[in-house]
Length: 333
Image (spheres, rainbow, N blue to C red):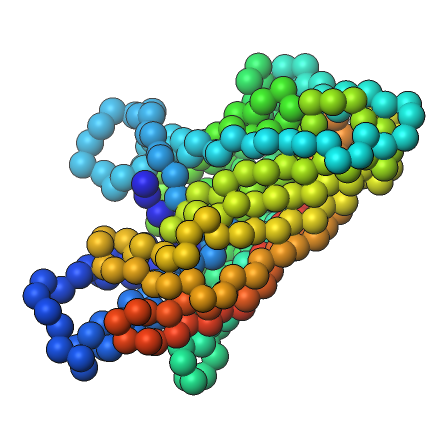
């Protein structure tokens, strides 16, 4: 499993957090635990980090170049299970994306990820990465959607400059017949920096896990169904999205989403065998409304926001880390 950087520099921070051989004295242990909590804190959010088996397909001849440059990186996405709670009003029909190969769409994806953390009684610190806006040209293929990135922007001047070489980069979404995303593919241009790559990975990963899959059964307006999925990450989560079809006009659907995340473990195992943290509190919920056209590859418009509070404790030092998180994904013109 490989942790995708949640913000520029976090991958380097994670790499520094290795276990020190031998038994640490109490003062050393407390110091080590505090350092671990500080440098790893920004990797705890499920929507800030992607953790998945990544396969790389070489698109250029191998040479002594950094990992990922000149290669397409594929991240499998966990399967979903849909359950209809209410089929809704008549008339009912199956919701299926109808995407003839070659169908194109222009849409803009914007993501904003906010992280605040506090260690014990220390001052609250803001670790939020800059927001990112990605103009996309989507084209339907035989098994999914191919994406071409336009000029990616950010309100942070340094990141905005770093993102300029990504113009024209490629990405892709493998999808099931019910609209569930089964894999995310990213192929940034070779000149794209690590910071820009990390920002793009984070943005697409957030968008993937705030997407929606349709039920297998026929439904009508007012229908309610759940989408259950495991969100891969340092802390594996069970995510349940409750979708309500509030309006349908032909192929145009308005869907209200209610998202809940629950950890599947009581501990978080730190990278590089650096120990573990106890999960003492975890509350993540969100809502949103999206508009989907069954004849278009991506959502037409809408916004989904997921947020909440988390608390972790180092069992060796009793140091406690508290976080307030908020992630917003927006689709629009």
